[in-house]
Length: 333
Image (cartoon, rainbow, N blue to C red; front, side):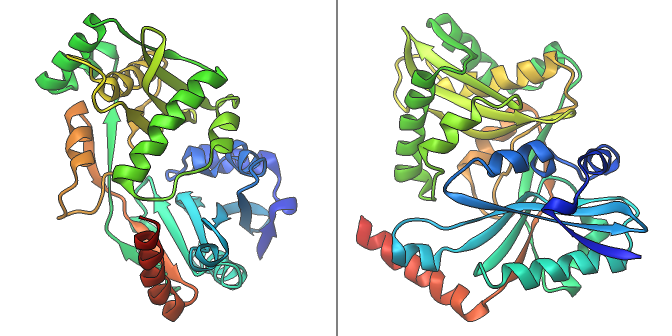
């Protein structure tokens, strides 16, 4: 018998067991991640599961979010499922279809679209998702396989190896931190980066102050003479360390590359602590030039097309909202 489960119905032990046996599991589908979402004031988490004969075989963990003032919030209402769906390898077509149908039904009243951001290969489930209106969008990711620190460093391009050495020789230090002052310094650099270059919504400071207190977080801060010049915020499960946010001052000084050092130190940490791979969490669209991808590929990773799935709850409003958000952004400038 197939049964749809809501948050209160999902057994934590069954959830953990599904994370352990699924080949498409990631940190973003864990109970720890869902519980953290529930602590944040600027988003609303959602959780749906499906069981077959009382065995949990599928789960969708994500959040509803909108940005800005009243008008912008109306046009930016969206449901995001980071990491993809958590699915048993042997989930039936009927069970997955039931899970997707409840997602469509419940989220359509609250969001303009639903976006599933995959960090694993969902090819076996692609046809079922598309049959339920979740269109596949090609999107790249980069994962760095880890087999020890020396091998990890040797995978770096010669340029990145040199930049790591030069940065450390210049007196720049990168270390783990939970300090609020370090988070504040990191956030100011990150906020400037998003405003000037990324041009996408950034989580508010609340997120960063709370996430560094979590057991699953590894926050590396880069400093020169006790001044924060960059950093990287990562999260983990039992097999991977995920780069969630990274930044560095553009002109920190001669022979200083804070973003390079931050990335390397995170990879070094992952390699030293038994993680299977380091996940860059996205590398843009295939066939489209993307400077960030060029940067990430120099750390020895494998480029993968894991893609995304997009369901339009309100197709006409989706197109109109994209235009309206573009106009609002131009007015703000």
